[in-house]
Length: 388
Image 1 (tube, rainbow, N blue to C red):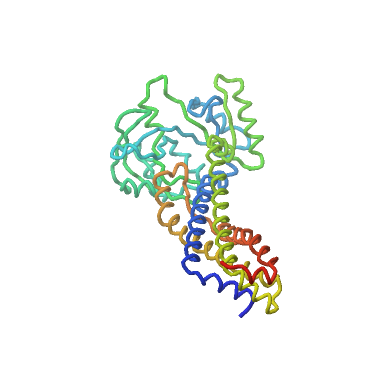
Image 2: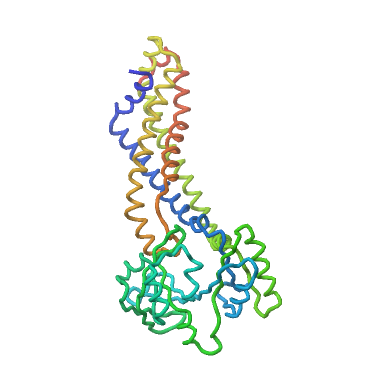
């Protein structure tokens, strides 16, 4: 039996307390992992954003439209290789009006050339382009709505009122983690033809791809400069910058989640520290006997640290082990299906799992430092006199 082994075995001398401590630490790790997964999933749109894609919108607000003629001007800009456009439609499922998913009117000839991360079979894409009332949906939304290619589906308009009937011509899959798999996409021309004359030939935003990602800032400035002399001015930015600006609106929430995750770790450290301190207090006379037999203060510190590391490792491993099915098999799937616009990919990353275990070990080590030092400083006489 080694010195560390003796410290580890000391954990199980009070099995109930050890199990409750491991359980308490595990719950703290689960909460920490869930919060960090939320933050990671929220930032994934920025992390995996296409570096060569630009978005051009109205300078005042994204909800204000641009003249469609701007598309050709952007397309002719040197350095721009592909251009498309889209309008936010704001439709909803009439059977479940409270559930949200993105609905957009797009240009069928160019949209999937710009958004290459959305994979759709060529035959389905061709059928959709030829079908004026055709629609393409993400695989997650298709399962949620219970539709397949060839089915008829009626979308209830909000911004553009009425019942809009479509034929589901295809289902796209995402090849990037930043892509929302719950989008409903149909022909922009269908929407445009139904609008009053004064609202026609307007687009929500213009999306372009560049020939060199490193030139994105220069190209954005060039595009906006062209429209500075027009009636409607624009703001162009990279997809990553646009995602960042969107996230900035929720900076207070993200900061709060960061703060809460830190509080959870502090609580866990207190739980572990209290358990270790109780164990040291109960075994003070034993440490005195060991010292009398020739064990050094360093040996006593090792006993205490071994006990702390055992509990913290177990708490970290059990916590991450329980968090995995909660996120991967339960919460993650539900969030992707119902909040895909905000969290297109909600999974526990290996990095988050590793951080959870390592932090548990680190906190267990820190929480044991003071009890270990106190135990090693006790004299043999004082230790043998201590009762309880």
